[in-house]
Length: 192
Ligand code: SF4
Image 1 (cartoon, protein in one colour):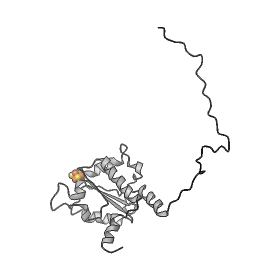
Image 2 (cartoon, helix red, strand yellow):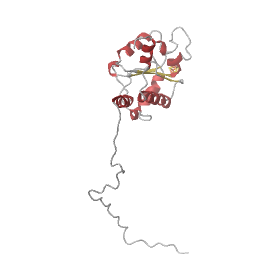
Image 3 (cartoon, protein in one colour):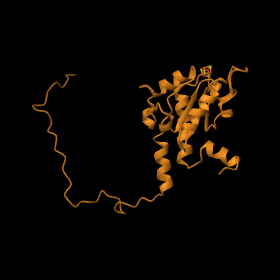
Image 4 (cartoon, protein in one colour):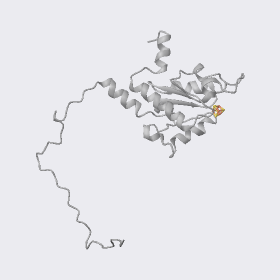
């Protein structure tokens, strides 16, 4: 059977897209635009959840994974948290990435105290969460002995994906208006 090799004389014309006549509002929903209601708390929680600024510090091997989380492959910037601040006074998120030695504990606490409220803490990895394999006198057996923790991320080391999952859990918590762990601790002690 002979193949049809005949070529069209000219390419098909592409019709220009017609513009809707002014006043044609058929495409709008029946209610004509609608009304969006919210309250200030919800807007504030939404803004806070999407603009977390982590403090720029790392303690051990987990910190390398934390750095990778901000790099191009995982790109934490998609969640609004790429701005690691070199000053705790401009940070509202502490990611404890690595084991906390007893000697380092006061420094971690000082950085935490210098962060303005409200503030949140992610314990990244087995060491920060529980001391990990370092069950000895030199390592704090869980950073929650030093600062109140909002989210624990397991693993040794946790992958960047795991940290991002923990981060999105924290965002969810903030969006729902749940209080930071620091507030809960203060409530426990009758300070609020
Ligand atoms: S959890 Fe593992 S990777 Fe993270 S600081 Fe401890 S030993 Fe290092």
